[in-house]
Length: 127
Image 1 (cartoon, rainbow, N blue to C red):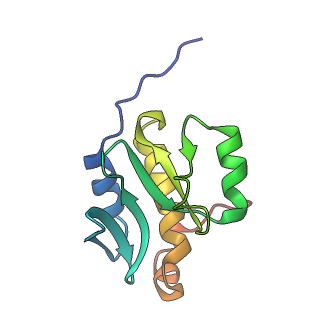
Image 2 (cartoon, rainbow, N blue to C red):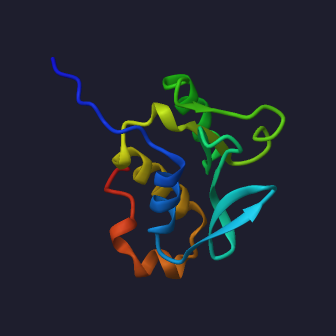
């Protein structure tokens, strides 16, 4: 079985993918780049550019972290009380997975009018 190689995901890839989403802006907060839609943060880059933070429902985090602990994690003492988790960029399986994670986070904070204007960004049936 051949393993498909992919280019490592970088902070520049995160920035490009996040800013490609509708009405997204970058704003520095706490000394780190954050990505916002309608003024609400859906993603941020970590201080060392090896991880990103993304909006994630609290009820989904435990399963994601248990399933792929090399990829998903919480920053203890910071993410505990928020609908937020971290993603190690080196563990991502390329640009497609990065885009899927960022789009999911974007959907969680985008206003309904923006979601309605971009049906191509809706979750697939059963997703």
